[in-house]
Length: 134
Image 1 (cartoon, rainbow, N blue to C red):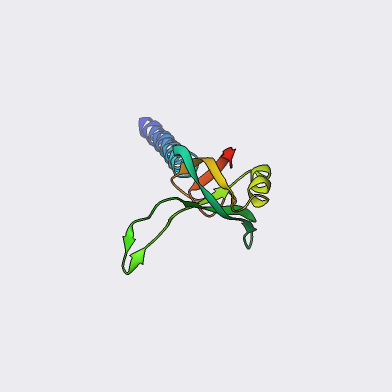
Image 2 (image 1 turned 120 degrees about the vertical axis):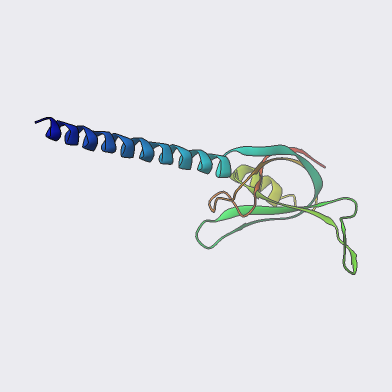
């Protein structure tokens, strides 16, 4: 009689262990996913002349842009490169403002993430505000 009770307790304990292990794995996976794709790693302001703002993509149509910053970039083999800041844009209203004012000088506020989500854009830099335009 006691032998069957011990066996039932062992089975119940194993099921409890498996459930706790699954919950820990799910919580760890959710934490890693949040950190990689939704945690704002950095934010700041970039200034420069807007080279382009486009809407593109095969499955997810995203808004992308590029600023050309003043000054010179790091030396590359054979010459000098300009400073370029490539970014994604989540808000259509911001995209429309940039699209209609290409070539002007902008101060753009951006957020930097660790990873890229296909529906958010092609870069880890996401512009969320136009601070000024000249």
